Length: 234
Image 1: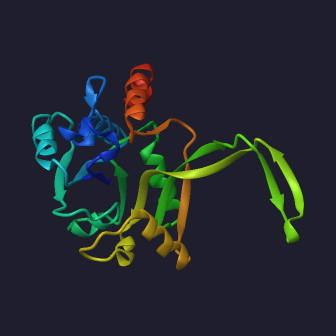
Image 2: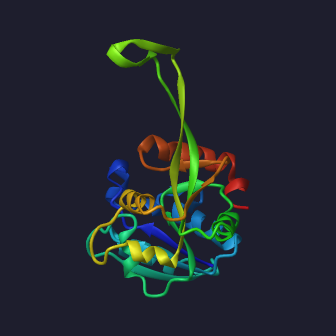
């Protein structure tokens, strides 16, 4: 199985840490975020992994070249200018009929093999791993009808949303929707696919997921990686 890890971003939300390190190389415990992901992919049967790089790419190359015990066939794809989340796929020459794409800055215990199998079973063009996020409203919420008439009231409700985890499975047909040589984000891809009523499915994950986007997220990732290490390194 093939995976592409998106590791080209500048990680502005994690400044000042990312002044000297690309976000995927930030350490959690005895590992970098990137190494945790690579070990997980190896565990779930992936053999080929492409690292899509940009910012401080030479550090990622040096890190992985000095750590060749992972048992994976690694390759690199470099962006000279930012191409968004999905645009870098156009730079890849060899793609399997089905492949995984994921951000290089997340901590999760998702079963990647089951995700791939779900995608194939549904004959999907794209499958998006999702996680439920709850949003608490600290005020009474009014629902209004015609002429501003109040028709319902909820006191401090909680709303539930399914959010993208930054983990996707694509069929090679996805390239038909991706422009060549220009930035193209996940949001643009979703607008295009849903607009054309393509076979796009979600894969709900009820385990652990953390987007390591801000300094407080990073501090949390260090603490929880040590607490639940067996879940992240099966």
